[in-house]
Length: 131
Image (cartoon, one colour):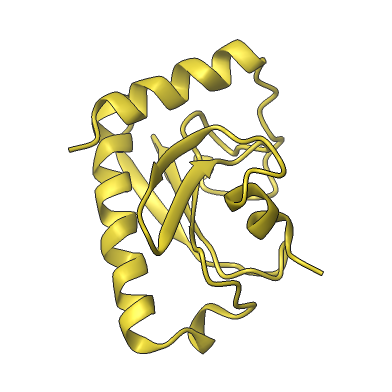
């Protein structure tokens, strides 16, 4: 059975897409820790990020870097943090989370509740800064 991320990539489940290449996909987390919280995934469904072939793993990080720079430009923040947890969905993924302080970087914090319009606005801002 395909992961929820594979279904998002295939367009079976809607998302707020940020960027896409032939091998990678980035979209807003629908349960964000902060505004602009983005997930970056390889299109190849692999559970553990360290099971990815070296070239695919390296490319994932380079793709994530481009997305992180766009987030940093579009969303007021001190820094864009990176986390790889991998327990929520059995599909390798990187969390890019804009923060003001270390207190903001906790998955235990209450998740933001954004409207569809707010998600669209954030996605448009980030996409607008992609180079």
